[in-house]
Length: 190
Ligand code: HEC
Image 1 (cartoon, rainbow, N blue to C red):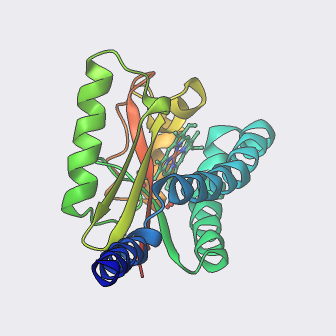
Image 2: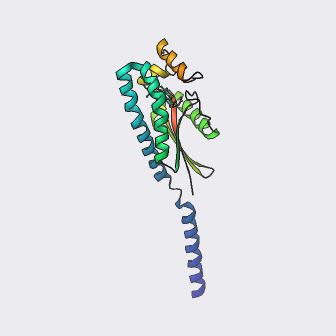
Image 3: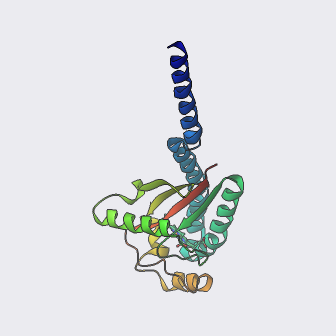
């Protein structure tokens, strides 16, 4: 009887250990907070530069700043976070180096639907484990400041400047509150 009890405890402990082993690496709340702090750093670096460019030279000047600065910041953020892949995405992209994967475009379409149903874009995110990767998407709503370069009534000068840098630009025609795009992060789970 004693032997059986000990064996049973052993089996229970063993299976508990292997359960923990298997799930240890997938701490979703932790991954989520890591992702959010990377996004904060990304946005917190980009936004002040965009704002000061707008202030000093208006939207025309800010287009070139954005065109140079945004990819630079993205590169820097990826270098600082080697385990992560970090980028900004959109269903109607301006930066041409952007091919969305199935998960990203499905989630962005879901975000659009949710905004159409009255939800606030800036509160939306998606977090899932897909094919051994932690995927995280944080929606970016269209604010008033975005309209000069992403809105419906873009000045001829700004339009010209955008076309110069991005001849295949699709990122216009947005109105206040719509989902402009998202930060897309992914981390391979070990
Ligand atoms: C001065 C013009 C300007 C303003 C204002 C502006 N953007 Fe952009 N936006 C750009 C440019 C230029 C790019 C392309 C940057 C690149 O090549 O990475 C871009 C790219 C993006 C992207 C990446 C996806 C894509 O389409 O390539 C997102 C997301 C985005 N902007 C969101 C916003 C949001 C949200 C705001 C308002 C808070 C905003 N932008 C305001 C010029 C602007």
